[in-house]
Amino acid sequence: MVRTYTGPVRIGLELWPQHADYAEIRRAVAEAEEIGVDIIFTWDHFFPVFGDPDGKHFECWTMLGAWAEATTSVEIGALVTCNSYRNPELLADMTRTVDHISDGRLILGIGAGWFERDYLEYGYEFGTAGGRLDNLAEALPRIRSRLDKLNPAPTRKVPVLVGGGGEKRTLKLVAAHADIWHGIGDPAQIERKHRVLDGYCAAIGRDPVEIERSAGVTGPSGIGEPGELAEALYALGTRLFTISSSGPRYDLAALRSWIDWRDERNRSGFRRTG
Image 1 (spheres, rainbow, N blue to C red):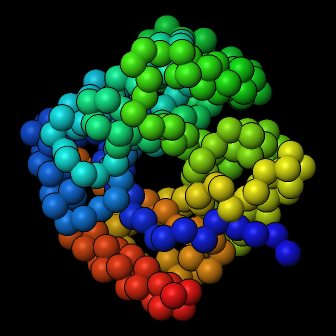
Image 2 (cartoon, helix red, strand yellow; image 1 turned 90 degrees about the vertical axis):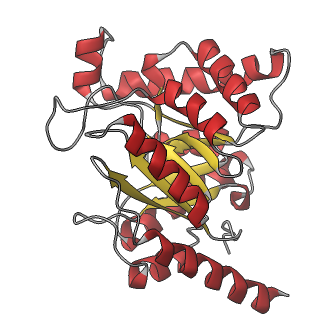
């Protein structure tokens, strides 16, 4: 029987840095930490992905540095850093620096990249999906190698989150390099990808329990209640549930329901195993 990750439930919040003044983003970060979310993510784009394509927008890693100073307990990260935009050694140094600023609360989220406008307007070669995956495969060990050489060293082994659901290559990279896998899809799709990932783990002799399973759970109309979707994903081994919110004003009303569901799920899990 394949063993999958069985850690505690965590709730992530991805704040899309679009269509908002930075003061609103900062307010949402403070509110989410006060509510008790486990991780606050941003994304790594240069333009809005939804809504007015030329609307207000802010850069990812400079903002993460600010969040590291503005928060005290919540973990932070990108969902996900585009590997194409930064040399792997530079990204490792940025990771180490924000890790120290945050006192060890950074998660390094990374993926191959996909948003063509970012590439074209900022002078990066877009290439092909296969080429971008080749670059990610080369970058992941280089990032780890540079992290091991930096002085001072990171405060901890920085968790690596790899985002993407490609079954032929991305999930193979997850099995080899990631501490967290993040994907999107309905429960049937997530179950299939879990099985593919577990198979890659078995092929290289890695225990699949080591990889936390994360899923994006925001629907087309925004943040909904946990309900059946959360329970179905939980039954499959998903333990990190990430909801998303966009500017101009970040509505976090439903976040409390997810936090309450997390707490009850973790209490009931403790009662079953304690």
